Length: 324
Image 1 (tube, rainbow, N blue to C red):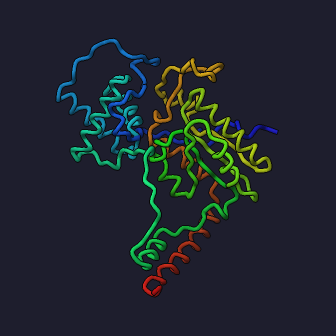
Image 2: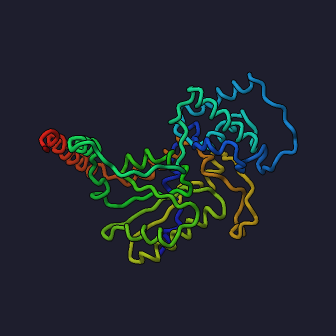
Image 3: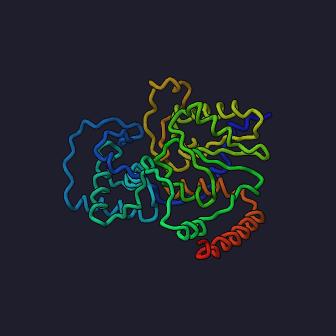
């Protein structure tokens, strides 16, 4: 039998070409020392002292940032840097990344760049739902009510990302299609793998998709996660498939690379440079995810689910005002 856990991604190959790029926000990391690509295919810290940009040059950089984000939001800060760098507005270097971060922060604080255009999936607030009165709860329930979309579909779909920062870029798509979105943060713990295995339905197959950097640890961490889940659910019909970053995507889209860390114990046998998932334009990432999900949707079952959902939401609406 073929090993379903290592088959190539047909969903990713079917993605249409889309121009533009994405960004992920980390405003507080502007002054950090994130390692990013340099001016050549293999980057390293520059020893050349560069002159400060003039106000006119900074204004031109601001224009590029705004143009990049106009059609590619929400995006991460690192994704924005990759798009701006690809446009030739900054060098592929740490200094270039920090400069983009500084200008993004200035534009946001000046009210020019909407805060919602940059996403930060690494920080969040937890609070239980509460209401001032029962009618408020019923209104919220009616507005947010959704039937389980995948209950009547022939397959179960889940998506995982290596980086929590990417969630803000793709969560709109997964939420639209009621697909669970998980964050692995590198190598998964036994506890998390067990909980995922426990969630697998026994009555139908599941496909798990993943987005991660193309580097030794990013690729191997997915293999490790697949092994753990499969071990906890030996009887489950589950397929594991990487959507990005894939070697063919690097070549087809000319994605910027960085040197692969040879100190990584998993680097042996890894060919070529490494590529961050942030290097893929946000619109393209969303298209990859959407295509992967939508190919499993049965249109007739979906129409029936939507019809019943609308009827049940109407029932909740009629309860408002009569609950006291």
